[in-house]
Image (cartoon, rainbow, N blue to C red; front, side, top):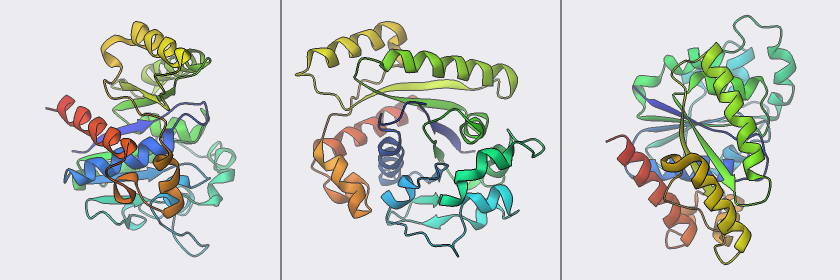
Length: 254
């Protein structure tokens, strides 16, 4: 059975999509069967894997509102072990459309259950908001990985997300746990980054990954080429950091 990990933080610009794409790719490089699900209407995860979208292509929207089985929406990527459920701009109105649907919180979980035996990991990238698309992801997952940028308001955003996780656990998904806290865009020459890292570790202890993702221009360049960073420049600090993160995840799983 696949282990489903949702990448979530309602704050934008913390490295959610970068983490989703590059952790999924790193697990795939380790020959784990990985499905990456893009639930953000901006579709940056989709384009970051070099998948061009047009109006005739199937996307996650067709699963939610068109009755298309999730398995029929899965597409190949440049990595043999990595598959994608792409997003599209149609998801922009999904939050409103979902409100009138029965069992609106559990639709994605039902879809993933139909294909979970085909994968070792399902990684879900979420929009930067705690709406129904993110709620569906949290209900479908076993764990939540939280990217946290080393900046002043980091802990404030974390507190809101922890309350949401607790509400989801109590109402829809009792097995949901925090997978880990990932410090991103880290520059340890900066005293604020050191302070934030220390505070996060003080609050969350062993839940904070040893791997920290540095500020790295290669991580910013890779999506414009439609590639995970390890296919763009595997020697870069960004690529090596996400490969190290994948090793930590695999070690946690024994």
